[in-house]
Every structure is written in C-alpha cells, then in structure tokens.
Amino acid sequence: MQGVVAIVGRPNVGKSALFNRIAGRRIAIVHDQPGVTRDRVMAEVEWRGRPFTLIDTGGIGLLRGERADDVIVAAAVEQVQLALEAAHVILFVVNLQEGIVPLDVEVARRLRGTQRPVVVVANKADNAQSEAAAAEFSSLGFETVLPVSAIHGRGLEDLMLAMGRHLPESPGPAPEATPATAETGDASPADSGREGDGGIPADGSGVRMKARNRPLRLAIVGRPNVGKSSIINALTGSQRVIVSPVPGTTRDAVDVPFEVMTEGRREQYVLIDTAGLRKARRVDDTVEYFSAERTRDAIERSDIVVLVVDAESSIVEQDKKIADLITEARRACIIVVNKWDLVSEAVQEAQDEEFGRRRHEGTYGRPRQRVTLGDFGEWVHEKLFFLDYAPVIFTSAKEGFQLDRLLEAVRYVGAQLDQRIPTSILNRTLGEAIIRRQPVSALGHRLKFFYATQVKLAPPTFLVFVNRDEIFSPSYEKYLAGEMRKAFGYEGCPVVIVPRSRPKTIETIRRTRTPGDRKVAESGTRSGVRPTTGKGRATAARNRPRPGAGRPRRDPAARGGKPGGARRQPRRGAGRR
Image 1 (spheres, rainbow, N blue to C red):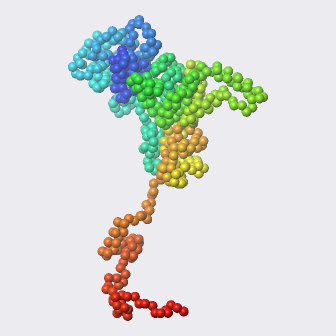
Image 2: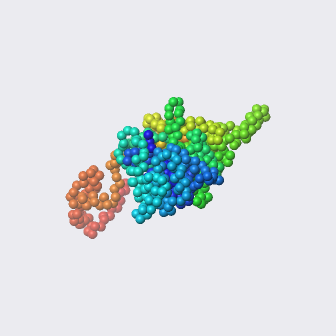
Image 3: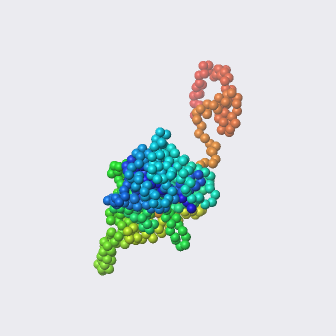
C-alpha cells in the first residue's frame, strides 16, 4: 500500500514551497499572496526507494464557528478535510518567524481530531540562529517539531526521516535508493524529442518506438468559466476540484487519477484540470500569469488535449489562440462543446421549424439551416479549420449529456496514437500520393521519393527520404498528412512528416578543376614528375615541347629564300589556267 502525505496549515506559511521542495520540481504556484492554492495538488514522489503521494492543500483561514461568505474559501476548506481523511502522515506547517498565532491553534485542534501522526514543520528557519525558536511550537501538543527552510532546503533530510517512520511499508523489494523525485509531469523516454526532428538519426535507423507504459494524460483546457472543472467532476463522480461561477477559480494544474471499466477491462487516465486562458493583454496579475504558464506546461506534458468551448458564447478569438497552442505543441485533440443544455431548447425549436419547412413542396433549392449535431460539427470545423481532424463532442457536464461519447472519443484517439504503420504499406501510400501531386518548385525541380519510415508513435512522425527536401513546403506537408489520414485514420492526431535528403554513398570521380590545379600539373611536368591520373597525363602531353623546339632558326637565305626573311612573290600567271 502506497502512503499518502498531506501538507496543511494556515494561509501563507510556505506549504506550496515545501511541496515543490519535496517533489523536486515546481508544480504548485508559490506566491506572497495568501490563498493562492485552492484545490488539492498531488504528486507521486519517491524517497529512498519508498513511493508515496504528496498532497498540497489550501490554507485553513477560518476559526472555530466562523463561516465563510466566499464560496471558494469554503470549498478550499472542504478540500483540506478530504486530504486529511486520506492521509497517513500530516505535515503541519507553521511560520517560525511569526510564532504561534490563533489560526495555528485552530489548525492544531483540527489535526488532533484526525488521529493521524502529525509532524510540525517550523518553516522559514533560514539560518542556525533561528532554529532555536522552534521549541516554542511544542506547546501545540505534538511530539515532533522540526525547523525547516523550504526555500533553501535546510532540515529536509531530518523531515524525510521523521515522515518515513510513519509511512506504510511498500510491497516487494525496494529499488535503489534515490533522492526525492516527482513523477508528475516528467517526460517519459518515449516522449523525448517531440519538437521537430531532433534526435532522429540521419538514415532513420536505430529508432525504437516505445509503447506507453503509463496512464493516458488528458489536459482539459479552454477559456475561463467554460466548464472544465465541471467535466472532471462529472467524469470522476465526485467533487474532486472546486467549481464556482467565478471565472478563474482554478489556478494550479491539478492531476486527477481516473479509472473506468470498459468491457471488463480497467483503463487508467490522468485528468489535468487547468486554469482558464485569457488574452495576454488582460493578464495583469502575477498569479494569473503563473496559472497560464502551468496550463501551457500541462499541454506540453499531455497526450490528448480536450479543448472545451462554450456553446452559449460560440467560438471566439481566444478559442482559436488556445487551439493554436495545441497545434504548435503537436498534441492530439478532442473538441468539446460544453453547456449544451443552455441551447438545447432553441436548437429543438429550430429543428422543428426547419424540418417542417423541408417537408413543404416549395422548399427545393433553398439553403438549409444547421439544426443537427452533424451540421454544428461541420460549423465548428469551419471555425477551427486547422483542427479539422479533431472529433467534436457536444456535452453538458451539469446533466451528464454525452459524457460517454467523450470517453469513447478518448479511447479511439488513444488507439490511433498507438498505431504502427508497416513500412511497405507506408511507402506505397506516400509514393502514390507524391506521383498524383508534385510540389511546386520555382526552379522546376521534381520530387523523387525513395522511401519512408515511422520513427515515433505520439505524435505519429514519419521520416521521408527524397532527392530534394528544400522543395517541401508546409502546404505540401499538409497534403501528405491528409493522404495519410485517408489511408490510416489518425482522427484527432497530428501527423508529422519530416523530409530529408538521402545522403550520397559514392563520391563522384569527376570534379571541377581550378586554375591552381592546372599550375600544379604544369610545374610537376616540367620537373620530370609524371602525373598518375589519365587526365593529368593528357595535360602533360599537351604541355610537352615539340621536337625541335628551342633550336636556333636557320636563315631563310640558306634555304634559297630572300635574306631578311622576306617572303617570295608568286610568279606572274601562277595559279591561272
């Protein structure tokens, strides 16, 4: 059984900083503003071969009998209570520099009623002089009090030893001891090199497509207040994340493990609830900025991105910008039109009116209105034309409308990501597509296809060897990706085609000679060195002096000519007939 460790305390005492320090990476948002953390943020952590689940919670800012007027504060306190019920060990974080305050006493009272082992963490002990003040917190009634500095990592070893004594023993042999590392969000070896064609050998050999050995990650993204958290709660059947009508309720990227039984088979997923993305010019708060960064990181580490749009407000410019982030990250996508219950009555009335008009005799040739889900799906693809390969699901998280269709789409797209194409069929498909349509070349060059091979599963990446990769344009790559989808499906998946010129295996014998090479050949001939190549011998033969060259010329008078080299005049009448 894997242990669970919950980090609790009043607001702004450094719980999220301690969570990130133990996890080994920046998962939770750390800010000076109180109440930044609201949902339960979880991470799978391993320390010295012992795995456990670490939970970060929001601050408990209510005294005994006090009621919160803010619905978000009340929901955050409920999330803390759920974390306390599931925990094996509780880390009670206090501020060493401020001492004991009434809210610390109230939190200690709640923790004594849980009957769980509690370790008091006196945070912000930045130097050795301040560690002596940790003894003051022994009055809270707990045995173990440890001074720790989450920012500088002081006292972390003693804290992990004290916490490990209360964790249940992990089954099986313990692996090799390693420092505390987080598994949440780490890229697996199969996911490395997603961007571009980095890491692909020049000839495509030696590439092994590794199957995914972890649950499928689903990032739920969209604009604020479109129902992302409601969809997660509806799928899990619990109030796992906080839902409120206030835009921007979710701040951290919350990982929610999810299991579902399908035809007697257990399927595991990780749902990632993210903060809503607004326009960049409207972000004027540092907390919202860090929330947007967590959302972008969630897109990068996900396998499938579920883009949620509002059915009532239609598709706006910000939806297109979020969709552009998905295409740039090369992630599989499913488009979900949520809040369909708000427009279902208007759609039903439009359907009755349109179907009645179509039954009339005089309606032939008139344009038809979009009244069916198929028509609306085509309209969504027209608006998001660069995601025309993504399936469109119309849902209502409030009423549970077509949530089963969403899970079916997730399973189908996940199966498409794991698809392996045989090389022979791949070469036949791409070869015929290139023959049917050649790329446009300004110099009139033709593309010659040699062969192709699949080098990655997620996203599906194919290495294509041609004679000229410079004439491969983005429009032609889109054409080949469309032909691949016609042949092999890949619905909801981006198809990445990497062109590469085939390297020359035999160097040519002929080469262009320079004037410097000619001078060297001539100098070698004069010095008596015979060239070794045929071309060099021909050059030497042309430059060899003729017989008699260099001898003094005889006087023309000695040969019967006129002295001085004068030329003889022809005889009169010579040449006449």
